[in-house]
Length: 192
Image (tube, rainbow, N blue to C red; front, top):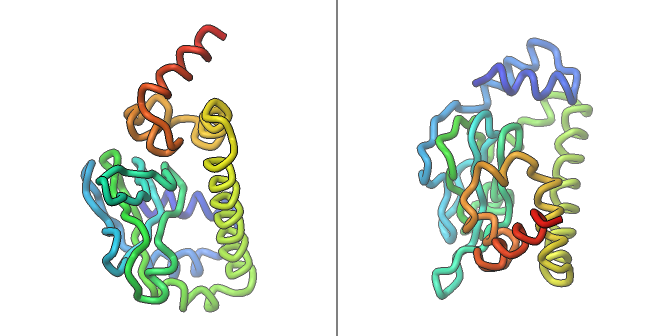
């Protein structure tokens, strides 16, 4: 599992072998079974994850027990309730595995030790967080004001492998539509 993280950083940030070893020392390899919960909404999050294999999701459950998916995290994605981990407050959302997955877990101490890896590493994670914030802002605006067909196209661009891997109900929950509406959108696209 650690080789996947090494490859990820080699493509994005030049780290020495010593830095890579120190970084991997901050992460805990873990296998998650499909459906296994990494963190529950309302409980203090203990871990975030780098996904080596499989797919995780973050989601909220409303008072009617309807799930609203905020993010998918397939291979080489990071997922965490940053606020809950860093501030030890109740999590705003839950995280679970949609497929059998291999992940590298990190806790609150991970952030505190980023400075030891130097300014380039801190800048990399700052940029990662900024991109995540911008993506969530675009997603919020999209859910509020963009037609479902366009949101589905954006989903396909952002997550090109997931349309074939995930159940339709999860994709619909991400898009904020019913599975039946997603079926109609897919049928229209197939007609083309």
